[in-house]
Image (cartoon, rainbow, N blue to C red; front, side, top):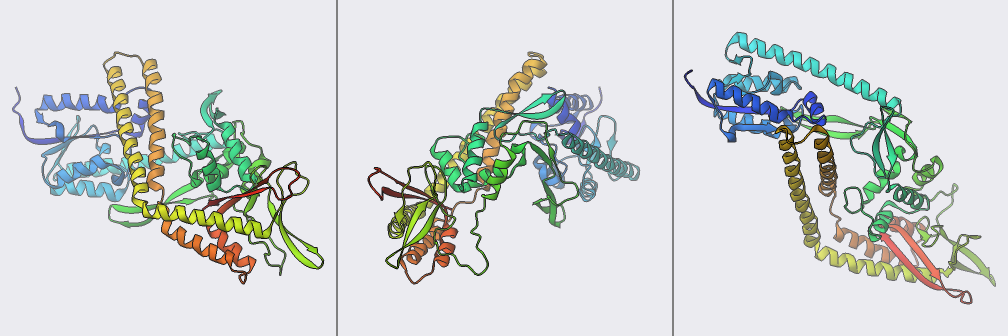
Length: 508
């Protein structure tokens, strides 16, 4: 029997791009590699404790993306290991030339061996070091070439009208038709139509989100609707039957050694941006899509030299039909009288109201909103706690779903279930995890509203509206800073002229 190789060793396991593809076919390569390396270590008498096995479940190229590798390198830096056992050299790193230079340098000055089933490398041996450098350099070139081929293949698929995204847009499911990846509308497609119709009628993103939440309609992943999600849906040409590629690109903003900051920016003017007619069925027409996007940022257009005379210009719409409610001036015995009037010739029971009644009702509504904001500002911590509680609950559910997924992998690797059953049982769990992670990302990225700042602006708007010496243009400017939309309701008995006036104010 061979003498044991004294010392403590670590084992690093990481999936490659090819391994990720195999996993989609039902093969758990990480578990397979662990079995192979464990058998190899036992045969060579390398001592590897369970706590020294680092399992990287992501296939990220950057060290910043690989948390387990960072933990491993911390142990190497502390000289805890005599050697690190890997499936192949490129599993340590083959991306950024600065990163793999740092990796080899760290192994060299800590005198840590790199062990593969084919060879043991001593970074302090000149021949071994040259071999390691050459392998990583070649792997880096192969990686760049593979990424270029992959990008070219994806771009061609998009030019063919295919949808190649991993997560389908809200209202669609992924499908394959004649070996071409595309989309098909699902039972959420009517909600998408409602969103576009509301936007085309002048509803803002916040007002649409509030309406859907009040109706109990869940967003993607089962969470609440937020304005940014509504805007993403409205701006996405997939809903009018198009597919696009490289709409965003990631660029490095700054770098300090291995740490660097990246920024996601629009690439619509880039040479590699693609937008073509897709193979899938559109949910909305081109005309509705264009009207919704034109109304997404409403503005008041005036002829040169004219000033706004309506403080509610572009803000007030009928709650029944969505049409604009404008200000109209008539003269009685030479004296002007202003009324807010529903668009003419509309089959809608809305009645007109005097400017005084509208302004008094608006001020009263804003005062109620100010009282609500004051309460929320005083209980800001409770609002943050609710968001944190939802985030923690999602983490628990994601962990539980991941454990169920791991058990299915164990059943498959033990030959207790076949590949078809593995896919059937694993796929819904993966989709559930993706939805929950998307919601968690929304919670992480959502900025908590500054209720105190909103309160100050609302009170300032109330003061401006109450001051007859302030012109309509200044009042309109202030209202646009705080108000997304005002829903006008004024219905009643046909014999009554004024109806029952009510304004529902949606704050930004």
